Length: 222
Image (cartoon, rainbow, N blue to C red; front, side, top):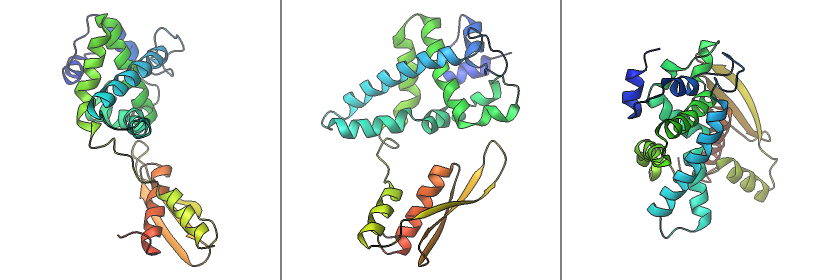
């Protein structure tokens, strides 16, 4: 496997190519724990966590712990790591039995964390792995680590306050290719209100539906 293009995108050249190959190998290819990425993912997750925590403390010096924790969750979550790996086109190099699996956010996140660990082990310096994280996460620190509004909770609270039935969510359909699905979810409040939201995950589609319901109810502006 020629990984030159990938290494250029990562900004790191491996001395031990087997470490890179391991970081890109899904467990469906081999159950050998020293040849798939699962152990590397475990280590990389910890390196990512401490690096992001340090970045946040240095960037937002006056924010309380609660606000930092919310930002932290956004930056280390599956969707964020997967988005960064997708931008680096890592899927092109993932080895798995089922080709569609390598496009899944869960797998992209696992591989992203495994790559962080592989860089650390290959270089022998945790600072090198942290530099990788800083290089690819810095652009997201302020823009995407702002805590998102929880429209589902907001809708739940508003309906309870108005003594309306609790919101009910129902998935209507799933469209698009396997690696880029679009879920449509309907939310209803009794027989008075109804809204439909869509997104790449059911959770986000529910949030979208709840937001649209709040707009329909006049709670927030559209």
